[in-house]
Image 1 (spheres, rainbow, N blue to C red):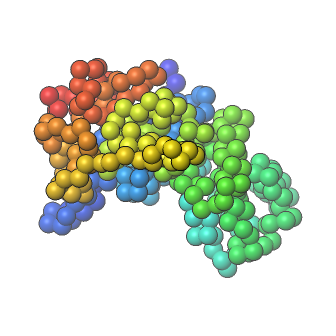
Image 2 (cartoon, rainbow, N blue to C red):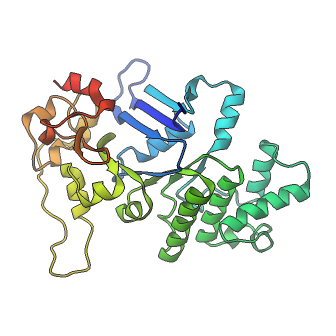
Image 3 (cartoon, rainbow, N blue to C red):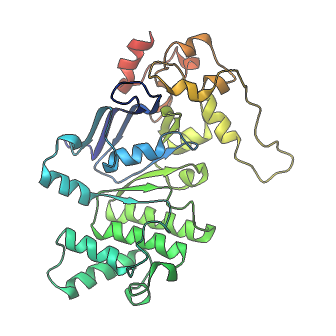
Length: 343
C-alpha cells in the first residue's frame, strides 16, 4: 500500500512557557490531523480568521518551526527523523509560495537570482544554457518570458509579476507539494484569477498538490478539494469543500459563511453573535481549556468548557465538525483518542 504524500498526526504547537515555565503560553495549534494522498493531486485548503493557526501549520510543514508534540510524515517518513539526504529531497519536493510578493526578493539582486540559487543549490543543470532552458520552461508555465523579466530588479516588476515568478520558482524544482500561504491576498482581482488558474493547472497537468492557506472562503470554494476550518488553533470543521461551505455544521463556520455578503440589498448581511465575559484568547492557554469558540457560540453548553469536542461525522464525504451538538453521531476515526478524553 502506497504511503500518503503528507500525513500530519496530532500536531500541537505551543508557544511560551520558557525554561522555568513561568511565561504565558499560547496554544497555536492543537491535535491537528491531515492526510494528503499521493495521487491524484489535490488542493487542500486551510482556512480561518487571523490568529487561527494557519500560518503556524504552514511553518511546521516547511520546517521553519518544530512541533511541541505530534508527527509530520512525508511519504511515510517522520520529517523530524530524516537524515541529510532525505531532508534535501524533502526541501526539493515541498516548496512554498508566500503571501507578500514585495518581501521575498532581495532588492540588490536582479530577479534571475532566485532561479540561479535554486539551480545551484540543487545542482539541476550542468551548463548555463541548460539552466536558462529550465528557467524559461518554468516561466512559461505562469505566462511569462525570461527576456522580459529576468534582468530586471524586483521594484521594476508589478506585484502580480513577482507573485507569478515565485510560483515559477517553486515549479522549477518539480515539487510534489506546494505550501501556498495567502498567495493571492495582495494582488488585484484579475491577477488573483490567473494565479488560481495556474494552481489548478499544476494540480491537473503536473500532479502537484497544494496546501492552500487562506482566509478567503470564496477562493477556497473555487479551487479547493478539501477544506479544514481552524478556530483558535483547533479544527472546527473539515471535509469536501463544497459540502462544508454549502452545508456548514459548526456554529463558527455557519457564522463565517453567513458573514459573506450577497449581492442583494434585501438580504441581511451577517447575524448576531453572543458575547460573554470569557475572553476567547483565555481559551488558548491550555490544551484542556475546552472549546475555543465557547465565548462567541450561540449554542454553547456547560460541557463545552470541560473538554475539547471531538470531530463528529456530520455528513457525507468525510464531513466532520468539532461540536457537542452532534454528540449522538459517530466520532471520526482519527479522533477516537480525543473522544475517550471527552467522555
